[in-house]
Image (cartoon, rainbow over all chains, first blue to last red):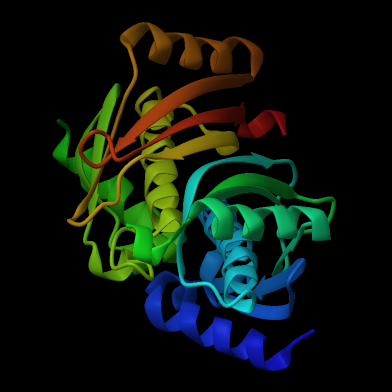
Length: 150
Length: 150
């Protein structure tokens, strides 16, 4: 884990995405193939007093985005990174702090960065597990493009 | 449009889902087959200064949830309503106030309520259009169950 990269990415996300601050988004672990994020339940409850479907998605998508943004940064590349599409499934209510985990393989990370360097554009599908079970899971397709090619 | 139902649902959502208040979620039109929601861009921006993917989803899913909750309330039924799964596609960045629209047919509304009354459980698939184009769209599957059967 890279503590400095972790706190820098955390600060960048909280500074530029106000909703991340409102949700209490915190990166707790970060490397080029793995990220964990936590958030308190209180600002993210729904009418049933459990995790709000919209918060679970927003925290989860910022988990996937954070991992890919770190991967690009770590490779020394200046690129835009956006979510193209995502699917979320909810299985169980969440009644405690919200924990999101995302992991990709070394090969997936390498292919994503190689595509970006070689063609100026790249895509990656990232899974996010939210809560125990997991209680919810996201599959998100992220698109990256070099800034100087836009 | 039912102004009283609109303001009551608005107040209920803002009171019980803190993130709805943080996003500036406002119901602007509501009947049993149609809802429109708006939110200012400022609390919902991303690192590019456009609509944050997580906010667009959370506002959109609260649009679908609001429509179904109103339909259940209008039928005089006491039921729990949750999101089972959803898909979102992002096509264009949003650079103005975020407008969400959702519409179902009379037949879909009737089948949803009839299932709930007859079997105690019901599901409905609701589409949400976000922004012009639409800039993003959600297809969400909602599950409802009578409270006294849980």
